[in-house]
Image 1 (spheres, rainbow, N blue to C red):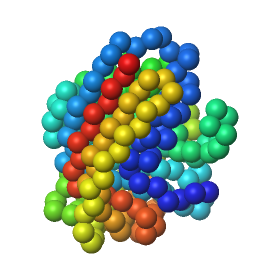
Image 2: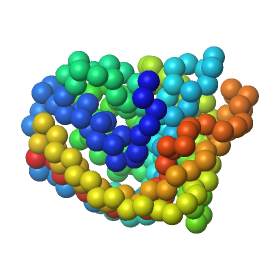
Image 3: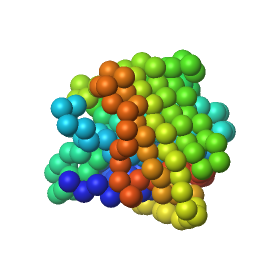
Image 4: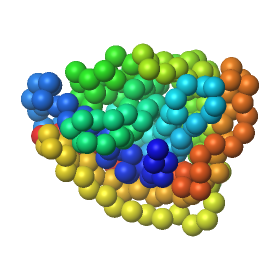
Amino acid sequence: MKKKSTFGTILALTLAILASAACIAPALAIVTYHAHANGGGVVIIDLANHQPPIQIAVSHYDYGDHGAGDYLEISTYQYVPPLGRSVWVVVAAATDSPTIAAFLKSVVYANLPASTSIMLLEHCQLQVCRICKTVIAYWTVPITSSKVTLPPGGLVFNGYGSPQTTNELFNLPNGITWSLTVVQIHAHVTFICPTWKFCGPVGSEDTMANLGFDETISHA
C-alpha cells in the first residue's frame, strides 16, 4: 500500500474518484466555492486488530462561501476500475457547518455513496484548531459509514521544520477544476482513542499538517 501522500494530492485523487462517477449525476451548473483554512492535517492510521487502514483528514475553516466551520473526512484504500489502480476514497465525513454539509451532499458527493455518510455535528462534538505549528482535532461521537466506524478520539499534529507553499491545479474529466495554494509542514502525529485503548504515534515521516491554505473549487 502506498503510504506517502500530501494534502493536495489526496484531494486530487478523491475528486478523481468523483469525476469517474460523474456520469451518474445530473449536469451541474457552474459553481465556484472559496474558502480559507486556518489549519488542518492528514494522516494514515493503520492499527492491528482495528479494521482496515483509514486516512483521516481534518480542517478548520476561518471563512469562505459557507462561513467558518470544522471538517473531518475518512477514506479507505480502494481499487477503482476507471483509474486502473487503488487510491484513497472518501467513505464518511463530518462537519459542524450546515452549509458545508449541504454543499457536500448536493454537489461534491451528489449521487455517490459518500453522500449518505455525511454527518452534521454540534460545535462541541467536533473541534479543529491550530496553535502556531500545532493542529489539534477531537470528536466526541463515532464517525460512521457502511465500511468503517471511527470511535470518539483525537489527533495532535506537531509540525516541525519550515513551511513550504505550493500551488496546485487539477483539471478533472467531468469539468471540475480544483486549485489550491497549500502551506504545508511535516508533522509528528499522536492519535488518542479510548475505545480502541490506544494513545500513541501514527503516520510516517511524510505526514503533513496544513498551517493555512486557500482553496477554490469550480464546477462546470
